[in-house]
Image 1 (tube, each protein chain N blue to C red):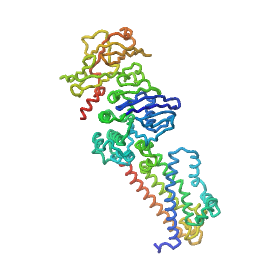
Image 2 (cartoon, each protein chain N blue to C red):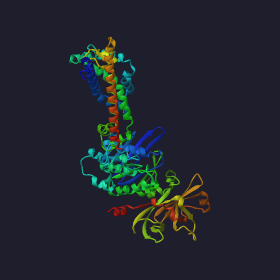
Image 3 (tube, rainbow over the protein chains, first blue to last red):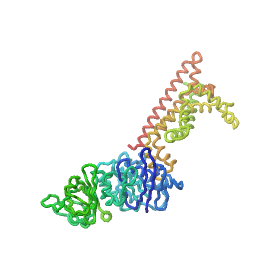
Image 4 (spheres, one colour):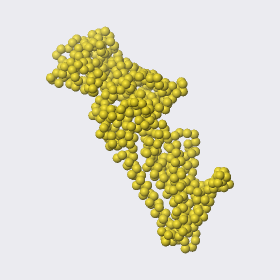
Length: 370
Length: 231
């Protein structure tokens, strides 16, 4: 099912004007604060009235200001998970989970038993939200949204209020959810690594407009997107296959440009993974360096070069079939006479890639679940 | 009991309880509705409604009583129509109910409004995205969460109704056995020589009823709040 969103709304000092589509799987809405991410979520949910817009979910029209159609939130069949869990304090976990069931059309949907099993909330069913931990509450909130049988799932920074340990606790559940439902998921996040792990496509927003949209690999390897993503977070996403677990704690991956050694990745031999490589962790060399501690050296061709206003420059390389971003100084770019078409070697320290930057591909996640 | 109170005193106490219960019970649904509108809705004339609700709080009670007489008296511009269908309020115990309800209304609305404003609107939004229409959102989320406020508002209104004097005596007078409420009876006893002991007994009754109501409401509110928050 395809969700199509077209919105125009004027705020004082800020205009939202955009259109995008989302398919099954996770579509991330990403951009700096105030770029309009939450506005989109609220407009799709029906909690905000926009000046002009059209939102459809499959054949169902949720909003069409041109035709004067505005479905109230209750009739949009949209599941929402917010940063704050918004559980009803006067109901226990089971009553919270079943709240949407009361109102959902009586049709076969996700089964209660399956959802509580998937989210591991069976032991919590008789407890009140006040007695749950942050991670548990957020799991219940996800289950509650799912059990209303939604046609779209909206997740507005569902992990932002949690500490890293709790985030790591919830992420696998969201991955599992993504892989087991045909529902399109719109996912707002500030975190590039979260998006790398979860999303198939990204809509990159800046000041109420779409700057770039496409697959995660396309958008994050685009030098023009670097400023909006943030210099520190900028980096590309490449795909690789696990080929060996070495005895010294490294995992050997094969990319389209050659081998890559990273700190241990817990994935089976042959699994596909996505690895996020931060632009600032990549060093460029004109010839293959020797006598260097960094293990990973990938040959590539410069496909784009973008000089910043400050001292920095962003270089985009094609390495095999993937695109890689490197952030270097303008001085280095001049000294090395970097030009589009040049062949260079990208040097990457193994330890620069954190475990959170590696995502299992869908097929693997399914195999792990099954 | 009969040994302690004269029939007139006893009737005054019973009448006050009856008037206060009816006044509280009848005005509660409207009080919740008005409090909800004032807390959560934007509409034309909101400030006027707010002013009207609060008027009895700031007007001299005797003025409120006089306005009630003008409006609901047998010749009043609402009262004459009520008279046609056989409803007479002025100088009847039902009129005392109306006077007490009007006087207690602002206190009730204020207490309930505060509790509605304390409910996180995000919870109500969450309910609506889960498929609940506005009326169901109110019944299943807002209402249970504001229950402690409703109880507080009702008890406050009951206590105010028990003590209402000015508007009541102006609107329905002070007829023993018919419209003589507890405060009116105290007033009457104070007007006759040697009535002090009777007046004092009724004052004790007033204190007893008011204290019981307050303690009961505190206790119920706490119990309900505990149930609602689940902690």
